[in-house]
Image 1 (tube, rainbow, N blue to C red):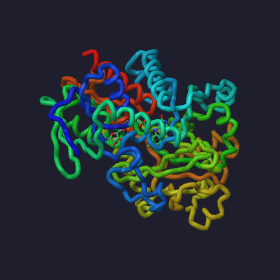
Image 2 (image 1 turned 135 degrees about the vertical axis):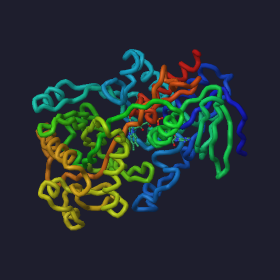
Image 3 (image 1 turned 90 degrees about the horizontal axis):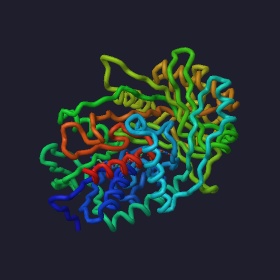
Image 4 (image 1 turned 90 degrees about the vertical axis):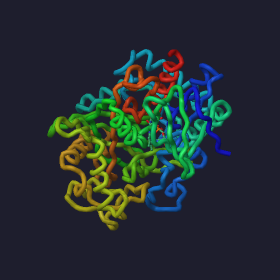
Length: 461
Ligand SMILES: Cc1cc2nc3c(=O)[nH]c(=O)nc-3n(C[C@H](O)[C@H](O)[C@H](O)COP(=O)(O)OP(=O)(O)OC[C@H]3O[C@@H](n4cnc5c(N)ncnc54)[C@H](O)[C@@H]3O)c2cc1C
């Protein structure tokens, strides 16, 4: 039976890794607290994407989206790469002492290990970094764990089951407003409107909730900052091409500054012997990738994101809308799907059609529509992608082969960051923001750490 109290000591909005870690630590710090976690999506085991279940070949735009929304958040079906370094994964190191951020990342990792996550860590490799530098490619060095999509999912199930005994967790609860003064929280559950309140409140909405969070900030006069967007493609090729990197460091993350425009292009989110997948953010389809740990579920291809960074200056300040419209164009010309094109066809100015794709020696792992990326992606970003693939080919020959597959569009938009002091939102009393949805993080490890940090700050006040 669905029962909501009038008031809680703490209410966390959003049940991704940030919100879950925040709840976990709040309870750890003080088990007498009455804590409520409200999640828009379904319980973790009930999150079933029709594409993943084989019931649909293309996205039917479920609401809530089983991939992005639900307990365990956007990371539930992720590859579970857990970064134990500060080189990338978010902006917490810009806001806090580096040692402190690292301490929290390790604490969150210990919690996950307690619920079944693996202990093996891939260490940085100087030899590969040197080889990259000889070609003006800049490899980021980090310690990283690979939990694997399946093992990561099981770990999150265990964490959630444990938390359910300690705090109140309610799913399919879409929070539509939080009153800045009274702390009244309004949400929709089963088509009915409910109200509750929290002495302390944390927004942990993730990327799926970044738009509504931005609107809430605007409505409540909270200053926001954001100007960056990354747009590009998901690259898929035979796994052997990057095996000399992945054997040593698991995930190569490489930056390149293009000669033509002097723009930064990042290769990241590498999935060895993985799958390309679609992602639905507010009705716009983009691409992403993942990989399973179990041998029998591995594919013959590896994939990675290759994204070109744009920093807008005045007068434009809507980078998310810009990325959405580029992705939307790819959806439009592919009849509501995403596009796949061979690199050779793109360079030759030809559309990849069904016949050409069938002739490709690299077999696609995603059922995307063969098409022409040059019809939907801006020239600057497309030139950057091609130049970077040619540069990467020097350290991993085969990267720029004719049959390398490019899926579009992939974009990473970063949520607008609210003005905060110690993560407490400006002009509020004990309303906090954390994780990807607030523009502080962009990884499992930093979002998890951010959850722990905010819980400790709440505890001290
Ligand atoms: C396919 C994929 C693969 C990824 N792989 C990796 C990886 O290998 N390594 C890595 O470090 N990162 C990875 N990421 C990124 C990582 O998942 C995120 O950085 C991380 O999940 C952010 O955590 P979060 O708690 O801030 O937000 P989220 O995990 O997005 O959780 C936010 C939650 O809030 C809920 N919510 C939103 N609005 C409302 C509302 N109004 N009311 C109630 N609830 C709401 C959402 O439904 C969601 O469940 C991946 C992401 C995707 C999509």
